[in-house]
Length: 62
Image 1 (cartoon, rainbow, N blue to C red):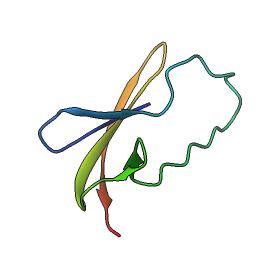
Image 2 (image 1 turned 30 degrees about the vertical axis):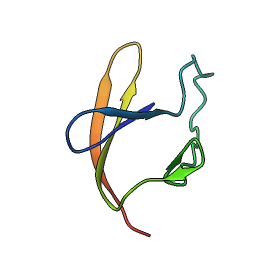
Image 3 (image 1 turned 45 degrees about the vertical axis):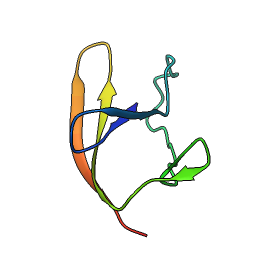
């Protein structure tokens, strides 16, 4: 599970390992990277599985 900024630059990697394929899995992200708060704006998250890739937009507002 990775986070990208509006320019498509990698911002953070939240999960970089295989996860047990249970019905659900929760990841919390507080809008910080290495303890530094990110600016308000549009970000994208990408989730890759063995068979699919999901890319969606989110808005970070503080």
